[in-house]
Image 1 (cartoon, rainbow over the protein chains, first blue to last red):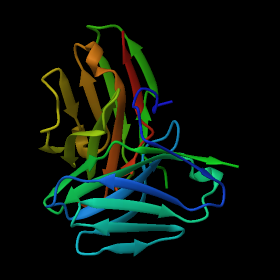
Image 2 (image 1 turned 120 degrees about the horizontal axis):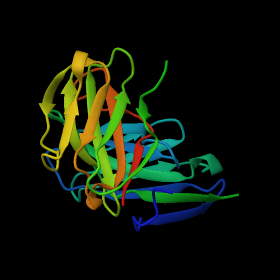
Image 3 (image 1 turned 135 degrees about the vertical axis):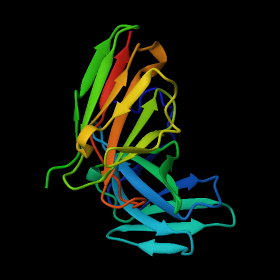
Length: 112
Length: 114
């Protein structure tokens, strides 16, 4: 798969457990932080985003936390399911710069 | 609604050859982006079109890469001549509004240069 050779950080959890995926970002001028999910053979898929003036945002089974003091972003997935197994990327975007700047990604494996 | 499509899904070529990748964005999306992930690296931005105009091509690695979007619909990315380090996955994404966070990605073209 595409993760081979990337030496991605990995997280292995049991089905039903909560997962926390972490990301450190570098650009303190970024306006938005976004989480993408990439399943094998597919492109990245938008999960949730958070604006820089917020510290928490919740979606369906997912929560994103932003700590600007330490430039840290996390994605929490509640009641993790086998279908959540994928590579998760954080990305940054500034209002004047539409480019997405991606982090390295984390491989999440959910064990049944 | 059809998503972003890319062709081919895989391409294996020899060093020095030419390859052309195609991207069909979601209908009505004026913004089209190319990204790539080479082995061991993060996904990196290559360039951005608004309709048929190149808004930003600052991520294009060198002049062996040429992107076009004639008519503001589909886009092509040509690599000529291909080098070994061009191997990787090339993603295309589209969005309705400039700067919109939800860029819809295609499945990517996996390019292997031998």
